[in-house]
Length: 275
Image 1 (spheres, rainbow, N blue to C red):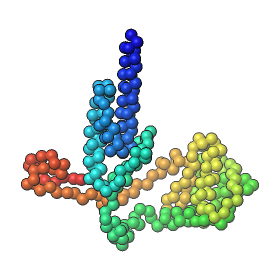
Image 2: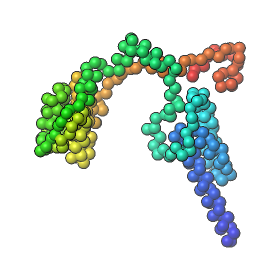
Image 3: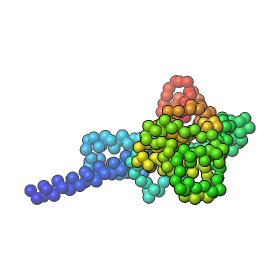
Image 4: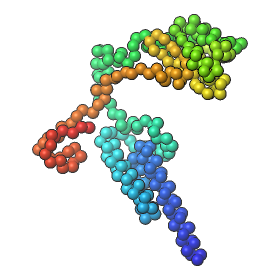
């Protein structure tokens, strides 16, 4: 009975370690460390896994191998991350792709100059919006709100001294109990941008209501609007950008070869494949 107990404990420990290695490999794959995920999955003993875990291992091993091959085609000269740089990603939804998936063409400088020549770089924002952003980023030599002043008076001073057209959506603020008479204070600050001064005041007001909502700002044209983030998120502007210079050009496979770019026989077909 003692031997059976020891054997059962040994099997349980082995199964737990294999499960942890499998989960780590999955985390590495989700973090876009495909080489490390593939190596870990390859060295993982399938006999120490359950049937469902073996199926999961086979699935992620296939994905990792495919991703490694694709990564090598996109950026063969990129160095692989060191194992000590690997960390677990709890929320991979917000993670941006690795740099190996962004490969600029060799003539990128000429492309940028061509865009500037035809004014392509000026289509992102109109001139009044860019001017307002520059004005908002300008430095103020010295400013202070001591003793405390009403929030509306502080905004009026920023509006007057900076020359910005500031509009405050007071009805949206008052829904969260923020009146114009809400007092704010700032110590004496020097060589600070108007944007930073405004953000410090907005953070202070948000904290005064226990961060039930966050105050923020938005610029559209020559108007700088201050309101809640919920209110500002309803006023979205749709912009369309030309990203033709970033696209991988379509490649052509001669019909006589009878194979695709991946080497899989295709028989007769149009002979064209995308990136």
